[in-house]
Amino acid sequence: LNMPIHSELAPNPRGVALIIVPWNLPIQLTLNPLIDALAAGNVCILKPSEKCDNTTSLLTDLLTGGKYLDPRAVQVVNGGAEQATELLK
Image 1 (cartoon, rainbow, N blue to C red):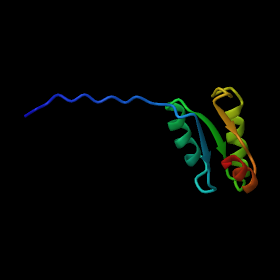
Image 2: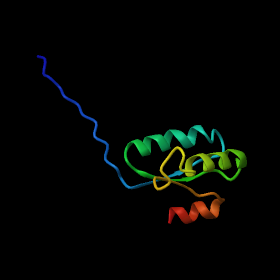
Image 3: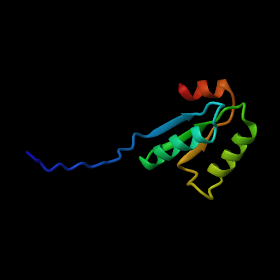
Image 4: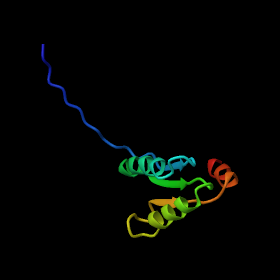
């Protein structure tokens, strides 16, 4: 018995996605969830690790400069554990 099946993927934006990035694999663990969240229609706040200074400054410049992404869609918060704790409140 063969029944025709139809599947559909409908992204439903949930609002704001907070992405807290660890120190290991900072580029991959930033961009993979960022692309997924933006593709679903969400706004993103990124909190990169404070232990990766060069990578953090590069990602901040590229993502918030307005050249590649809309600065209203992605915000980067730099800092340590205090800033991460404040973002989680």
